[in-house]
Amino acid sequence: MAVDKKPTIKDVASHARVSKSTVSLVLQNSPLVKDRTRKAVQEAMISLGYVRNRAAATLRGSGTGLVGLIINDLRNPFFTEFATSVQMALADRGLATVIANCDENPDIQTRTIMSMLEHDVSGLIISPCHGNGREGFQAIERMGLPALQVLRQIETGAAPLPFFSHDYRSGSYMAVHHLLSQGFERIAFVGGLEGLAITQERMSGYLDEMARHGLPTAIFHGPSTRAFGRKTVRRLLNDYPDIEAAICFNDLVAMGMHSGLTVEGRTLGKDFFLVGFDDIEEAQLVYPALSTIRCNVKEFGILSAKKLYEMIETGTEPTIEEALPVELVIRASSRRS
Image (cartoon, rainbow, N blue to C red; front, side, top):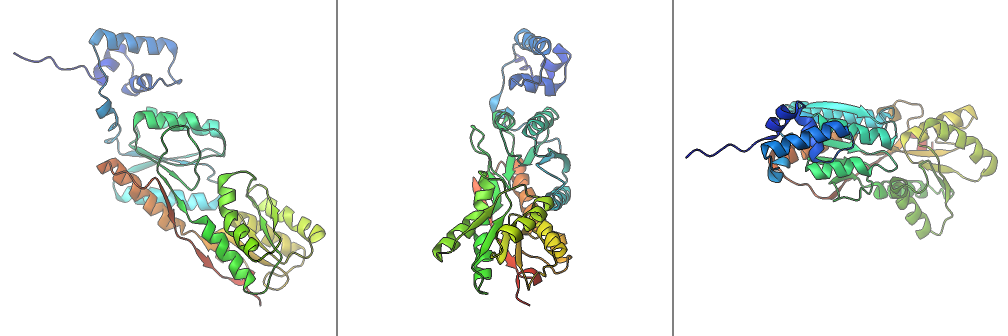
């Protein structure tokens, strides 16, 4: 005797006259679905006797060939280089990448995640915005979609997504050690918003090493921008003339300080000493060239793409938290001339 075929999401979608993606969103209780549409889908499920296969749901999206890459701020050259590296590495593996910029807005991030889920992406790589973005991450977890959180980590309230970043602590430690070895003792840390985990991580080596030597710290929190770096120069020169060197939260802040010091007639490598963080391409092109902590963004992007690809293709779960080593690149800005 023939066995009746179980109804599928496709059958429910056809019966309710909606897309398969809409049915999936109803199954996840997504707020993106209108009440009238939700009711039509639920009635179609009852009518057809549809029962969700949760094991199959964890494999959804594996055949679309699209990967979502959600970036907190593509204006930052570091993230632009990262996105390019990821996109090219995934292309080599036959996957296309949809790249979205959230402009440090968690609401945009949540809507972007929901939209990508609706369009059945095979997986997601997310460098998250600061702030509350839990809803989007919880939707990813409910759908069992392969996803990797990179560079920044936020608490989602759900099971943690695998997280891949850099060993920021050792980076700032190396920067301090380099400056101390040249006899500098009044060293500032400039940039990074106060209270954020990534700011604390990038400061931690600086704080530990300065404390170990019994030296005072000078911390100037603020946006990780050129404008903040340039503005901080005037404050340092006016109010803290004894500070000899600075380690910056990222290269953008360092570039701003580089410019501001030049305007003030101060020569890097002679009157003031500066170390950035990230090693974006511009760091070696400015004059004097900027010393920095190299995070090797190209390699990081390739490895991030590889991790997600393996999650999609084999179901392999990477280490929950993993940090790539960094290195100090010494150039003219922090070396006594």
